[in-house]
Image (cartoon, rainbow, N blue to C red):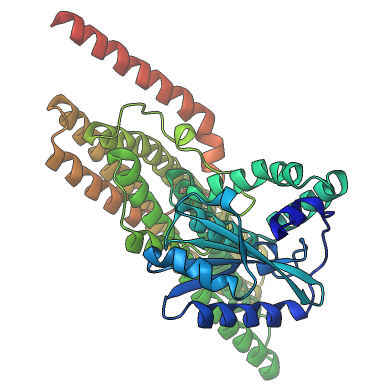
Length: 462
């Protein structure tokens, strides 16, 4: 009876990894490489034993991607010299499966998958391995599933394998969307969320610098003043580092938005080199996060085209304009309140406290004004208003492009100008989106319904 038949008759066991595994795998790879020469191949360690810490059957899985696939028959004969027996039932012309028994401590067998380079079968094995390596939680769930299946189907290899199919398929389907729009939108939101966190930390560090300066006016002790100065320098350094991180995350989020507009709006795909460069900029992990679905993010349902790109810009601009206006108004009212508070404190302190106390309080207020200037609250308010105005112009240009049948050059220019306007705009203030979300959603739906009715009326007149 062949090893293949024995594999199906033996009890399925799930064992922990052993330290001898790496050495056994390396020896086998070198033996295969030497045996099949001069034929050339890429040999990858795949399967559960290729994932550090993951339990599995006492089997080493090797993927042999044969560069000269026309040598496959000859290579199978050569591998027989190492004890590998082919399984004719799995010979699909583009994949050969071979197996041999070994005695390397806990390792009992080697499964060899012979495929052409870049075959779907081989690629799936590599992708599944890499997903398990990258996601510890995924590897743990896979470990649990295999132990459960081995306990219930210890004498049924087919049932054990079938039990893993749904899990493996779901992982591969998820991985196939790595460069999809849903992943891009999720990365965009994750990077922007992280950028906003750092933006808040920048403001806190600036406030602490101002607070340190304010507290220092109440001390005349040289040692204490030196401590305040050192704290101020440390906080200034923290501000610089936090601002740099904020810019990096925002840059990654901005790039994700640009890519989504092209990929979703025009249905274009990017080269592998460009996709790799794009995703290399993302630093916030999205493993375990709920994917932002393209259908839930954009309301447009037209096929990828210049019209769809214009509609995506229109929707994004509609929301962004409102959030920028609301942020500018919030800052305006906030500055007015602070100004009135400072004036009230100055009037009260002038008549109620001593001249020395008034002098100290004036210094504190000056330090607070330094904070307002360093955080550029006034500049942010102006920037919000300018961004809202620029984006409002974008909306009018989209309407003009729609009336002209969405000329490609016009839409591309609008997309470029929209990205420039958004990237130069400050983030909406914290809480503004949650505060405005419900109202904006209803208004946007009403806007879409009016457009639909107007389009239907125009068509009926023609």
